[in-house]
Length: 162
Image (spheres, rainbow, N blue to C red):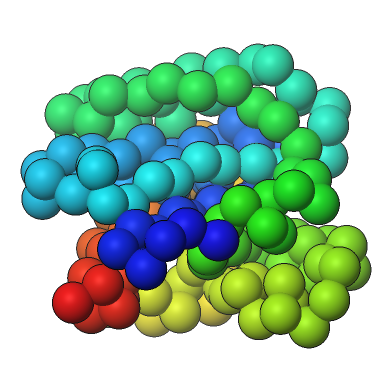
């Protein structure tokens, strides 16, 4: 857990190559725009290790870069240390939320795990769908949901830090 004047967020999906790195990179972009990079940090992880070390999916990268958002990072699997190092752990769908909750070491860690879509303000979605096996429209929808939810996350944290 960070000091009271700072906050940390972890975005989690299945493979950590589409949705969660999109969350990390969109949120990082917002933090830069709002001059909050020294107060809020973020990262992303997956619930599987099949893509460990790989860069974000090219289609997701192209979608975000077309919106002026730089994309970086490499896939990794969530670890027990993440429950200690992050204040908020945001899951992209119910399956991954259950997976994350199943490895949470205690009640305090479980309380950090929240559905990402609960922070969406302009979209009514219960999950961020996995765009991996679909076409370009799926990546566009995911980017729309991620941008919406990330703004909601930032608003939530700014209230906590003020």
